[in-house]
Length: 186
Length: 269
Image 1 (tube, chains in turn red, yellow):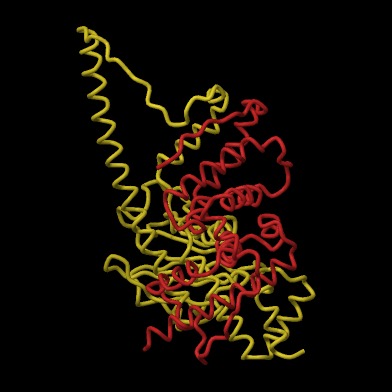
Image 2 (image 1 turned 135 degrees about the vertical axis):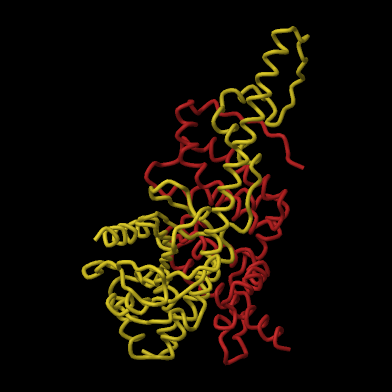
């Protein structure tokens, strides 16, 4: 059930909201897609996106023109999510980047096995099985095609951490895909 | 440096996260080490497959977007704590004769509008389906171990290969001095008709160009250039000399347009 929102935007002029809409609405579908990937629930994703836009509109006067708007919006969405019950649970996994990752126990790389469109579902399931901080960094890099600097801005982490976390995330993904391909053969 | 150390850099290389010097070093290594080159290719394929699997996976309900648009475009009207979703009561006026005539006219206009919109939607849906099928073919080509039937960067090798296989011919652009590279082509079938699928490379991204005999329902009647974006891919289509061109790639819309411009120029020769 969608909550009923009220907005207090006294600080914004109509011109502000107009330029905000022009900047923000092209990212709507993309933000919703990311919200769904984070929350894994339609209703929660809808609430999250609405609240993100409300907060972004209120915070728009503090947005610095010329900085990366998409990363700024995602940062608001993510911070909003982390204050929800589901987000708090996900945040526990954020405390540690040292998730134990086992090397794929197969000579056949999972990427080679899982390439066809029919097997995209396996990729989606592997992504869903990843901890949130691994899932989001893969989505920002591979789906949103953000560069490392943009990802760092969106996640509020240094570029070095982006690289190391992404490395571990992909390794974990490959492990899950390897397990899936072995399970399919068994 | 050992292969393991190089492999730690492959992700950054594929994500354009390396400096030019680092990229040059990795490229040199990949040119001499087939194992690392295979690893890089496998990771690139997984990266592409991840994008394809996740793009537009979850689509928002249209009313959600509308609600958010209303919320952010009319902020002042919401200042006085008016609920975001509200259902004000509305009392119908007593219907006079003028009201009835007006309503009848409005109903007729509404019915006409629904019919016109339905036809437009149907055409649009058909066209969308056609482009989706071609996009699937492009994705299948990328995943194939034999993406082309004729593998050559020479347009004078690729074009003659289609002679006798297609009931039409087409011109290919001279790509010298451009960032695009012809990879080859293959025969494909769409709606039981043969067509050409050409594969181009642009900075490790692959772009398919489908050249088909123009047919109803495939694209808009307009001869202009139409662009689409679906599932993260950019598409451009146009009609020229009775042939329908469709360019599909995961590169930027500008890159797709540039290749389209080159093909259109070649088609005019």
